[in-house]
Length: 519
Image (cartoon, rainbow, N blue to C red; front, side, top):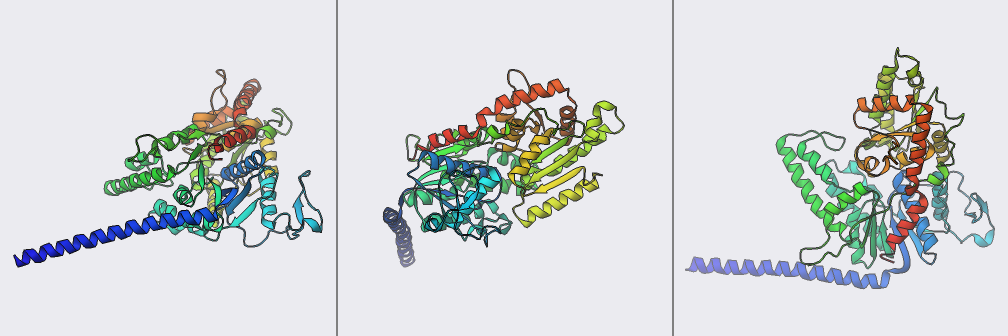
């Protein structure tokens, strides 16, 4: 009995202790939430919208969306101040040393306006506005407030060789916390895919929205892990490891779906992305009877169709006898530039010893244009150069242009005959739209946005080619370069007709309309 009494007492003490711990956790969580609410009520800056974009100088499609979204809000909501949370270069770029330089409202150039305007706009605001204009042709009509982030290095995936998704997501909360504590906006918009910050933003009193370019995890990823299909982000493993990875991804998908539901407005960039977000994001919590989170909508990314459609379909610059095959895309592993080079080499081999109908292929060259974000990207470019040489391609047959200005890209689009794209499950494919707007015949991957939204027939007329394997790409390149002038023109006209829905104006109207859900 004594032993039992002792055990009962211990159990009672243990139960009391557990209750105390749980009660303490509950009280701490409650106090934290109430404290955050009280903090938010005094710290939220009214009539401000904050865009979290930790690296606003990557030069890709996400950055274009950022600047067009900022411009759309500035134009439609002139009384709202825009905050941009991002990292900054270590020192000012050359040529931007004069702090009295401002962006003229009537000119695309920077000019000195005088002493009285010295405090009109910060240096980094001018720098970002100039970047938006020079890199993407996007003019921001008014200044913005740039909030520097010091912690963005925590988002570098190379820091987390294991459990990358979870650790990156947790670190994104730290980056988002730095941003929101430095300046808490009334409206918070995530444009770069850091959804784990959304609950924190809601807790601090922000109204929240997200523009999803690509789901952090998708049902396609879960299927590939389960089937042990090897890709750049999924190495081949044994059955036991595959089972563990599948469980890990499923748990992460639950977390991702939970935090995504904290967005009061959710916009996706394609029907492919919308389908995956709809499958993963929670519409309601288990204690709720009716869905509270909005169903995701689709607003196609802004593509510079208005300017690019001015490029003549037929011109002397577009040399059909010595054609350019153009590739536009950041030098990241998922873009699979190696497949482009392999397919081009296969197409050249098909042309060897052939008749005059394949002569254009034999004289063609592959031009790869893209941005390098890190030293790893630069090493990747060197590896691709070496791969091309190993396949027998000269430096004249396979060219690389890294971190070039938009004017150079536009010039290449005016001279290219075929454009190639190879990313599997590309969320949208702005580069593919730019090909079609410019009169460049597109050869894209038969998946994701290009297959679902972009390369679709118009009244039975094909608007481009879809492929998956190196052999299919090689055949598509041959067909695209060897079709008759009449067939090429019909495809060009149909492609230009189909891409009008991807214009910057369509994006501006759709984005502002969606954001009205929180304004």
